[in-house]
Image (cartoon, rainbow, N blue to C red; front, side, top):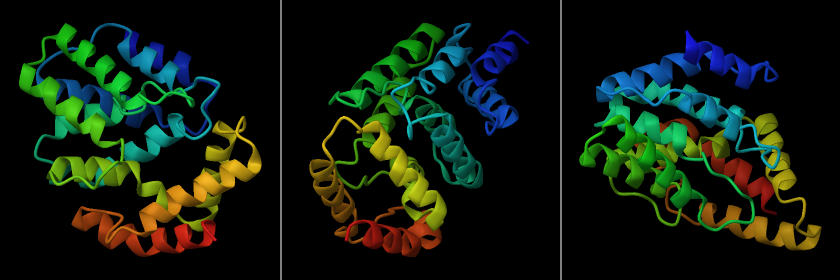
Length: 220
C-alpha cells in the first residue's frame, strides 16, 4: 500500500501513465530476484523521470519500454535483471553530462546491494544499463533485447517519431539550431549506416523497416 501511494504521488500529474503496469513490473522484477527494494526507491525513480530537464527521457519513455518488454519477456535469459535495468537505465539524466549511464548503473548497483542482491545479479544489471550507451551493437542476447527496447522509438509510427524528435530537441534547446541539426543528423545517420539497427530477431522483424524510413526522412 505504501508503494502504491508513493507512486500515485509521483504520477498524479501524468495522466498517460499506466500505474497498474508500473506497479506490476516493479513488484515482479524484485520478487523474481527474491529480494525487496528499499522503501521509497520506486518513488525516487519515478520522481527522477519527471525532472524538468527531461522531455523525452521521461515516464513516457519508461512506459513505452515496459510496454515493449511485456511482449518479449519470455525471450530473456535473466528477465528480472533485464526488467530492473529498464527501470534504471535513464535513472540519471543530465543533458550536458557524459556519464549518465554510468551514474544510472551506480544507482542501480547501490540499490541492489542494499537489498541483498548477489554479486552476479548486480553485475548483470550494471552491464545491461551500460549497453544503453549505444557505442556498439551488443552481442549478448539480453543486452540485445534491452538495447532494442531502448531504440524501439526509432521504429515508431511517424507521428510518434516526430514527437520524439521534438522532445529530443527540447532537451537540447540550449544548443544553437545549426549545430544541433548537424549533430543530430550525424547521430541518425550512424544508426542508418549499421547493417542492422535492431539486433534481436523480434525487433528486427517488427521495427527495422519503419526505423529506416523514419531515420532517412529525419536525417536529410
